[in-house]
Length: 522
Image (cartoon, rainbow, N blue to C red; front, top):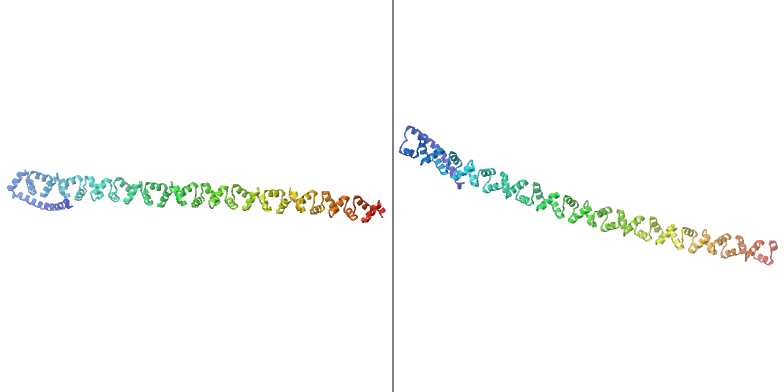
C-alpha cells in the first residue's frame, strides 16, 4: 500500500481533519475582526482585486485557502473546500465538484487516476479503492465481483471473470481445481469434484454427473470406455470392472453371469452364455466335459457324467438318464443298440451283454435262458427255446441226442436216452419208459411189435425174442415152454402146448411118435 501512497494520503487526511478544526476557529476570529474592521490592509485589497472577490466571505476564503487566482477561488467555492489542503487536493485531482472532493478525501485518492478510478468503479471506501487498484479492476462489475468473491489478486479476478464464478466458493473451487474455463467450473460444480484429479478424471471420462464421477473414482476407470462399460454393466467395484473388461462382457447379465459362475476368461463366459450354465458347478462341469452346447450340459447334468468320456458315451448311446449311463459304463456298451439291448434284456454285466449280443437274445427271458443253460451260440439258444429246455443238462441232452422238438427232449429225459440211437430207437419203438428202452436195446427189438412181444413175453434177451418171434409165442408161458422144450418152430410149440409136454424129451418123443394129443403122449 505504501507503493501507491496510501499511507501518505491517510496521514494527510488526518492532518486535514485537524487543520479544519483550527481553521474553523480562525475563521470565527477573522469574522469578528472583520466586523470590527481591524483586518483591512493593502494585501487584502490586492487579493480581493486579483480574485475578483465578491464579498468578505470570498476574501476570507481566499486568504484561508491561499488561493492564487480567481480559478482557485471559484474552485474552492464550487467544491466547498475547507482549507488549503482541500484546495490543493482538488487542484491536484482535477476534482469537478464537491462530491469528487469528498470522494477523494474519503478514499484518500493520491492523484487524478485514483479519483477517476474511484468514480468509475463507484468505490465506497479506501478499501474498495485499494482493492480496485490492486486488482486492476476495469469497471464497477469487476470491483463488485472482486468484493463478492474476496479476490486476492489480479489473477483471481481474471479467473473469476473468465470462469463466470458466481461466489467465493466458485472461485476457491476454480483455484483448487485449476479449472481452465467456465465448462470446467460448471463440470466441477455439477460433479462435486474435490480436487484437480477429480476434475481431470471427469474431463477425461466425459462424466455426466456426480454418480458417474463417484463410479469412475470407485472403479478406477481409465477412460470413457471403462466408464460407459461400468455404467452399462452396473459394475459395483473395480473387480467387477476388471472382470467385465477381461471377459468382454456385453451387458449386466453377462457380468452377473460371470460373477455368479466365477468365469475366468472370455471363453468361460461365452461357454456359460452358450450353454445357459446356471452356476459355477455347471460351468466347471461344462469345462471339464468339453460340453459343446446346452443339450450336452443338460445331458451331463442329468446323467451325472464325470468326465468327457462319460459325456461322449452318453451322447453316442443316446443315454436317457444316469441309470443308462451307469449301465453303458458297466457293460462297456459300444453303441445305442448295445445300450437298448442291455436295457431291454436287463443285462447285469459285460458278460451278459456279450452273451446277448452273441446269441441274438431277443428279450430278458432269452438272456436268462441263455445264462441258465450256458448256451454257447445262437443255435443253442434257439434249440433251448424250441425244446423248452429247463437247464444245462436238458440243453446238453438235446444237443447230444439231436432232439428235434420238446417231445424228443421229454422222451429222452424220460427214457434216460444216452445217445441219438437210443432216442431214435425209443421214438421208433414208442418206448414208454426207461425199462422199455433198455429192453429194446437189450433185445435188439426192431419195431414196436418186437418191443410189445418182448414186454408181453418177458423176453430176457435177443434169443428169447427171436424164439418168441419164430414160434409165435403168445405169452410168457409159451415162451418159457418153448425155451424149456427147445421148440424149434411154431409147430413144436403148438405140439408141446397141445400135448402138455413137460420137457424136451416129451416133445422129442411126441414128435418121434407123431402123438396127436396128450393121451397119445401119455
